[in-house]
Image (cartoon, rainbow, N blue to C red; front, side):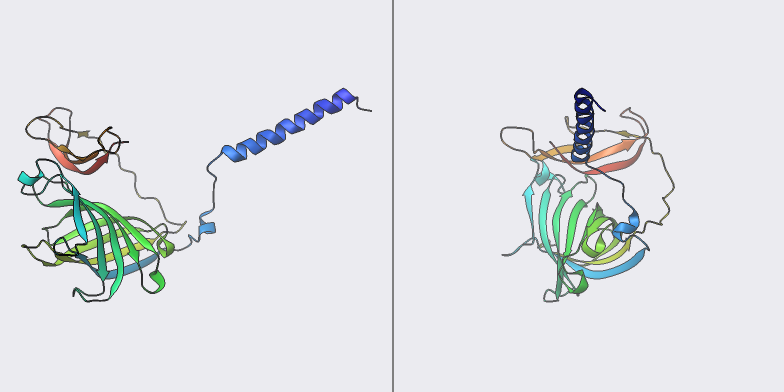
Amino acid sequence: MATPSLLLLLLFFFLFLFSSNVAAKQTRFYRSMSPTSLGLHKEKLTHLHFYFHDVVSGPNPSAIIVAQAQTTKNSPTLFGALAVSDDALTVGPEPNSKVVGKAQGMYAFASHNEIGLVMAMNLEFSEGKYNGSTLSLFGRNPVLKKVREIPIVGGSGVFRFAHGYAELKTEWFNITSGNAVVEYNYNNISPSGEAQPPPFLFFFFYFHNVVNGPNLTALRVAQAQTTSFGAVNVVDNPLKIGPESSSKVIGKAQGMRLGY
């Protein structure tokens, strides 16, 4: 027969195992899942076509500049300006065309040499089976080029796990008011658990961030009054093969940087 002390020891041992297991379940924030449990079986390609109405003037603008650097007013490309938008998405290019959603987000003028926007947009649809679903895009938009491409980086609703690209063409632009209508063609893929991973590529380069001197590549356009937390910078930084300032330029890093 087990002694009382042995029973007490076994009781403490099982209580320890139970409490350890509970603690592990409470503190772990991840778990493995089967792709099929989320409906990822077969890839489906969806093509969306609509028009994006960007109104920056008049009594009811859909896009407004909320911050800019002190030097932006002297820049022919508006480098350093940051805008927030709530633009209508419509079936046709006409102002009274049927609205099928909204493009809500922000874009920064992030190029010294051309009117180049970096766009972070969430497209919320309000029509048919896509009502309530969204697509998210993030990328560079050199607006004066005839055709531009911006990556789709995600989505929600029927577009969960979405990826693909948007092809943009300017349908109409008023040089006086700045208002524009842009044609969007979206090719979106809902991925499956059977998709093969893309080839692995390794890039190696140097990012040159210049915040002082006559030729700045990064401008602070907004910040809180008492702290650098919340500071917003717009950048147009060269990417070079080496760390030297004279090294060969192979690209640009254009976008926004936030202070946390």
